[in-house]
Length: 335
Image (cartoon, rainbow, N blue to C red):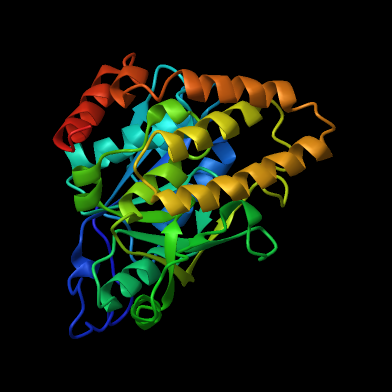
């Protein structure tokens, strides 16, 4: 797949860390599960980008509807991986990133779910910010809005609390704000850093995989939220993922504790800050749901204390090719 730049192309910025950003090889990774109509819209939006990705990888998470067939037939010509079982968003993104790096030689990996609809200038804006940045960047994130244009509460970025005045100035020069973590709802990751630091943990299944992974990339790297890059996150309702978690509260508790207690993605003071905020949020949820989540949360707590996440290649073992790609990246990263 070839890409086309906007008319005239971006003007190179002198003294920037990524002067060749627009010519970098960008591979989009879309994870899908039983949302064939939204997937079609997502792929249509990728095909309609002012600066198209150089390749598209679709991870079909063992969908029982026609999502896999939609991906296979779409004229964008995606490389579609049909997994044998549903390994959740975390497993899908681990497999997709690995494939983008191992089989497509990605310089940058652009991540999104199947309900993410990028506006036509979304990728071009990310690359323009990258090209304008005076410092090397590891993660760039889009502004995610709901269908009515409001900022989506599910995808608010975590600002870098310890950002210096110089870091804020560097971010402003590139047209963004410094961030500490990012959502996978349109995140552009530096392929060099993923090769060096590894993939997300597939064992998270859902929730906090992006929190931990982008936190890992940004522990010593720089990240940017680019407000000019806009995507629509077409969830059914306008709410935070934790508003009514039900049985998924298990993953919220287990995975957040995994991220804060079993990784080095966050400094000790950040663990205290994020852990405190998380505990307050859980307390509010338990009160709102009159304790019905207590048992679910307790199971998540026990699971987090009992063991950490398994190697991603083990989680993906039923899909040998995907497991091999993941193993190649994580072994090279010493994980």
